Amino acid sequence: MPKTPVIPEGTGKPLAPYLPGVLADGVVYVSGTLPFDKENNVVHVGDAAAQTKHVLETIKSVIETAGGTMDDVVMNHIFVTDWDNYGAVNEVYATYFPGDKPARYCIQCGLVKPDALVEIATVAVIKG
Image (spheres, one colour):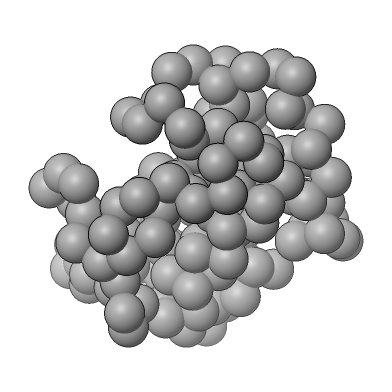
C-alpha cells in the first residue's frame, strides 16, 4: 500500500522519528499532536483550553494539507494529564466538531513534556 508523508508548510522538526501525518488509501493518520511551537516548546502553559485549540489547529493543518477537512475526522485519541482539564478540553473540542461527532476515547496519562496538558491523535477519511 503506498503511503504519502503529510507535512504542513512551516512544521518544526519532530522530537522523535515520526511524521505529522501519513496518507494511505484515502485515510489520514495524524500523529499524536502536542501543544508545541516550531521549536518544540510548550505553548499556553497552564491553559488547557488554549493548548487544546493549538493542538486542534495543528491537526487541522495536517488534514487540510492532505486534502481533507475536519469534517473528515472519524476518530480521535485524546490524552490529558489531569481530569480537572477534561471540561476545558471538551468545550474547545466541541467547537471543532459541531455536527456529527467522531468516535473517540480519552485517557489520563503523563505526556512527553510536563507542561503539556493535552495530546490528540486523529484519523480522518478523505472523501474522494
